[in-house]
Image (cartoon, rainbow, N blue to C red; front, top):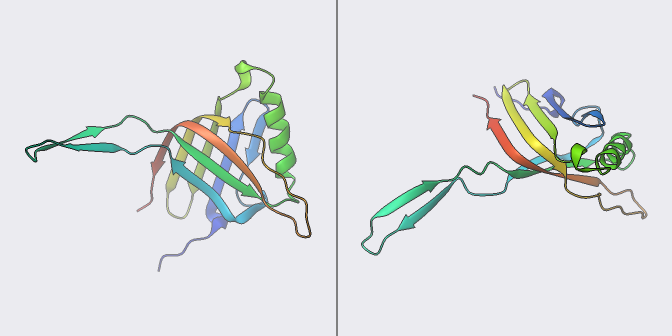
Length: 145
């Protein structure tokens, strides 16, 4: 029997200004963490005569989105890290995000990671999620068996 639990997932953002857990215990919302590649791996070109070719792309870039509950202390940690890294180019874009699913042996390593922007905030009758977006130059993933 195969099962999944977010409790088995470990995720960490490491870079100038600290190391911040982004999984169980960090106040991650039900929507969790998304990793979205920026580009296709391949381009297929078909010639006038029907012959074709494939072009393998080296681009491994992508976007990581982490959704945190409004009341989580993780928002303050991320906000402080972003403020620290905005002080200059020497602290920008050199983070690493690592995500590991211990039960399946899955690993995602994101390198050359930068905060994309300050998260949008909403105040209303009910608390909204705080979405933190990151851009990664290189994402390597190994899905479990």
